[in-house]
Length: 322
Ligand SMILES: N=C(Nc1cccc(CNC[C@@H]2CCCN2)c1)c1cccs1
Image 1 (cartoon, rainbow, N blue to C red):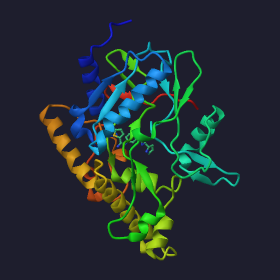
Image 2 (image 1 turned 180 degrees about the horizontal axis):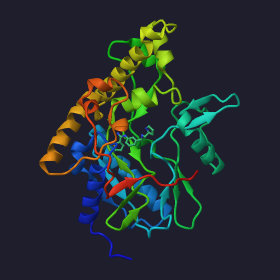
Image 3 (image 1 turned 60 degrees about the horizontal axis):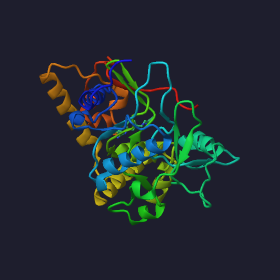
């Protein structure tokens, strides 16, 4: 077993792992990452407390701080401490007999799993019920924890010009916290290291709200806009996407919650490419992830190729509970 990394070594490793993440458009700010050291957490309760602290620290009243909380390292083959949730904050998906889902369909299997583990859904299940955290300590059964409501900031979605938009009852949480990946590098592996930043508007509007296999809201928004959905060439999906994205960006800014539009994020990434070239470093990039899911060719990141290397240190996928 190697000597543990100092906090400085751990911080540098996590920052470089972010800088190496080929799928991330927000890497201009890699050096601002705050690393919270939770390697001493030895019980599920202590891990839960550190996760709640991460939410409060990163949310920061809406002035979001990019952060990573690092729990204990493991030898390569061990499972170690694991957070089963893909993100610390996710909404339940309740599947009914006919296959329809109330809430987030992407979370239907996980929702079933946590109910098996003893989670009690609310008396009135809804579209935005917070899922519990599932924390697994080495050689122990997983434990469930409800997130304190005051640690989860949410934004209600309204539209600057369309009054009826508020009636859709849409909301989303302010901070994305990826909690199922491992931080690997310099001979160390950290299987629990939730990391968070701020959202790009398209993630919520185009993907979480827009995807057919998610909240599938394009037909509803188009109908409320009075568009003719019988003709694809009327581009009703595109018009609905623009208004969903306008609403998300407007609502987050109104609420004082950090968010970035896909045009600004693309320009920032081009600056990052410039800075890295000046430092003599290649920038690994995955075009299919870097290009925003709407108006791709209107973003400069679209008009070039990327280096497909995957250098370490890195945040890596790992087998989860399924
Ligand atoms: N803005 C963010 N979004 C983000 C980053 C990484 C991963 C994810 C999760 N999205 C992955 C899903 C899976 C398929 C399509 N999207 C979101 C950030 C999350 C953590 C720091 S920034």
